Length: 356
Image 1 (cartoon, rainbow, N blue to C red):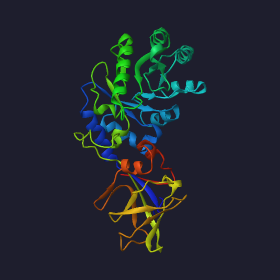
Image 2 (cartoon, rainbow, N blue to C red):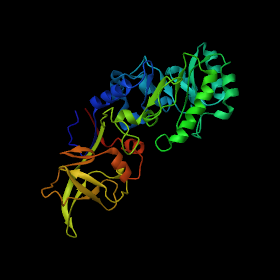
Image 3 (cartoon, rainbow, N blue to C red):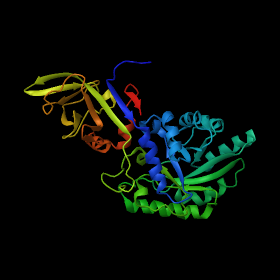
Image 4 (cartoon, rainbow, N blue to C red):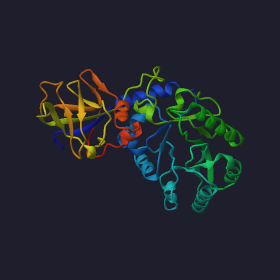
């Protein structure tokens, strides 16, 4: 067993993760499916190990970005659908059958390719139709959707098990989000059957868009990790708790220009960005310690004037709680001019993982 001391690490609290899923699911109408988004290593939360806690919390379906991630889910979970949200390359399509994955199809030609593969194998493959209701990314553009969907539904070898869309700005533009909802409902109402999953809600939309027919599933990403997509408020009734903490240690303590400083064992190779806004700080012994100057590859310099007895080896908190103080992931992201999603997935594997 590896006994080396920790220099920089994240702590992932799976008890909180499971609890968050339970709390979110408890607010959903009866029969609404919980689609658990675990792409990008469960947003940096150690996907393989997290899967069982998602299941205990009540996840019905898993969603990933690509077939590699689908294969990792399948190594652990054999009896839940796995939806691949992003387009699948031509060379990868056969793997959808091997992994028992559900591809999202964004065109008739893509659906036809899966149909041909399924018929050649004597199988029926479940797929979901992805609509572009204004995201401007992958998906069947909504203005052309009627004709394309009609043609897809005639294909043998595939079974359309759902339709969905991505929201472009649910955390910033409620009016545009409402427009995307209305467009989706208009298209889905023409083709949906009782056994199809219809989903567009993400974490942000869950705050103010009712989960009501025709919608019968939600896709949860950021919220299940205890992160609010908005700067303030909106989910007080859920009492969600952050799952991830990011910590390091002091390597040296000294004085420069009359300022007591410390060097911390984490730099931009550890996911600490090279530039911070004014006001950015870390916690040492629960005290706020400002970040000084530019971050280097392996180290960050902080002011420890507020900690008279700071010493080598002291724990430094970039994200999380310490001795009554707290730095939220949202605050840290704002200081680094990042969005929370980017912050979570930017912490590389050279940073140790402590799973609780």
